[in-house]
Amino acid sequence: MSLQDNIARILISPAEIQSRIETLAAEINAAYTDEDRPLLVCVLKGAFLFLADLTRFLDMRHEIDFMEVSSYGAGTRSSGVVRILLDLERNVEGRHVLIVEDIVDTGRTLSYMIRHLNARNPASIRICTLLSKPSRRQIDVRVDWIGFEVPDEFVVGYGLDYAEEYRNLPYIGVLRPEVYRD
Ligand code: 5GP
Image (cartoon, rainbow, N blue to C red):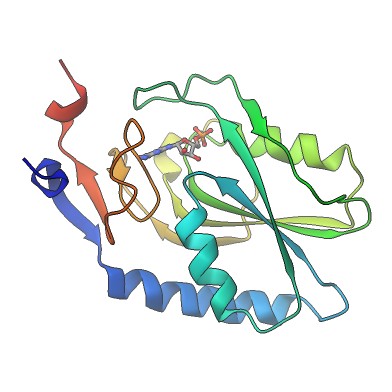
């Protein structure tokens, strides 16, 4: 049984993902100057493919760094408790920070990260997320760039996992509920 057999339907194709990222990158290029030299903070693990594609479409000067946070156990609902598993290597004081996220669901992870990074006095913090589930939002976080809005279903692929699998699928797909319900 392959991973694909557990996908109920494909929501966003690889071509749609690439074309949207190209558009987002053009907007991000226009929002910063070379002097700003923003620090792109990739939120691991889910945003690793998004960051990899986004950075190749950017032509302004920028740096990248990584943070790993966990708000989920092995299930499909956020626990609400955010833990930092890996912190930034770069100092963000006085820097323009662009958080690169895979998906904003309740908004808890992002609001925690913003508070955490704000305490280190960056020049600015902006947010770019590939996906957003607006119907699930509990905390009102201002997101500057959203790739796609998705319905309240559990999605996997293109970096997003279920129990650490499915990240390699080249598209965003809906996981069959019977895979995670007993
Ligand atoms: P929030 O704190 O906004 O509720 O959740 C954000 C995190 O939950 C995301 O970074 C992601 O890791 C995870 N998440 C939320 N919804 C989904 C989903 O539909 N699929 C996957 N694979 N992860 C999700």
